[in-house]
Image 1 (cartoon, rainbow, N blue to C red):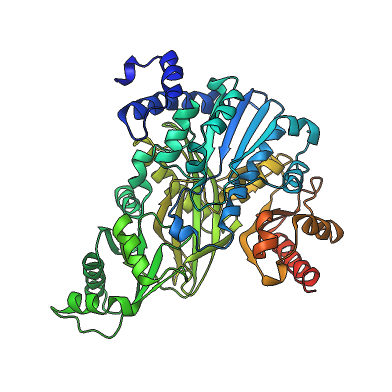
Image 2 (image 1 turned 90 degrees about the vertical axis):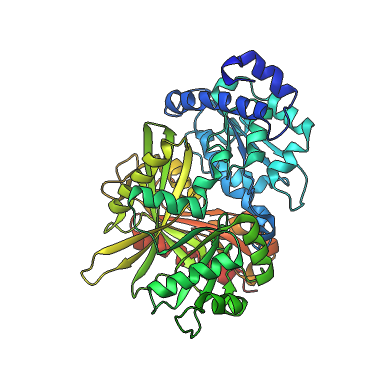
Length: 522
């Protein structure tokens, strides 16, 4: 069926009959639905009083084998609870779906953060659904397997022209769900997955004239990896390490670090690297063995790039939003906190990024946004960098990846934006609240200690109130907690610590850790 022959009535008829996933019919329906997303972005998004419905599906539709290695990963569905702050808009309705029911204690905690809206008023406009399914399948797949749940969601959508679906990341599953619901999806068609892959990102950086680590993309086999590693060694005999990355890895857990042994740079270099590849490579995800890593690499393909060394090295990022082809926004910049043996694992972020280079990040983010917008990319995405301080005190930035999805820096920024109604000034590298004050935060979603195991969300809230850690709406400072559902079982939670200066934000974080360690020490 040709796109131009589909009328709005046919949309209603066709999505009710659920066109098979991956078919041209489904794709045509999706493209037509997406046309209304641009209208919503221009007319509804900027209007605080416009009626709208937002369907939130926080599915981490990622490699489930890798995701299962992350402690409490099922509770990462709670990260998009920051979007409950949309209920501060008095005519906005929110539908939130999760794998398992989210405690009312956690929902109440978020609703108490709303200003100018009573909890009862907000609660009447919020509907929570659950699949009651703890299996390792992505949440979106669970929803698609439950047609009655889909029907209940559809019955709550009174006006499809003012309703959209938002997800953590977008795959063919999320595309199918949008078509089943008959609403547009704020994000990029998964047919463009390659643009957000590690290989696709390198090609985008090359096209935009942005520096990146030396390396190779579109690698498929161990032989390809060995060839790329040998090429790096020939170009730079002093190189000590390289990074092997799966195209669709996340939070560093799809990466492995190769350490060069003593090898002669001769005709047998590639052969010798291949022969000893397993001995000299270490996976970032500790529970992901090398055989499993290479199996996943064969499925996803990937890249090899130089491991950048530097005496002073940081890992900033820029977050961008493409609303329409001519509406581009630099939403924020961050200095990311990386951990693990080779600093490959995302732990948290400082906002905004250092003012010495924040505007440079914004300029590169704009270049990438303009390039991707012409290809049809839509929604939020981030560009990550490795930046090294040079002898002249200037910074050299190397772009390393594009994430066409929400990420670890998305929910902290959304929280400060919703709580303070402010805006990031990308030219000056500062965030200014609606009252004209600058604010900063120190955030992490990987605060973990076995001492915290057994601490319930109720306990945490009691502790926070007693020690004065709760976010203060009048002062626009304090601590906002997330991942509360992971606390009791895994001893894990997240913090967004907002302050009037970078130092004050860090003090809130340090105090929160001291208090938790003290209260949970037994």
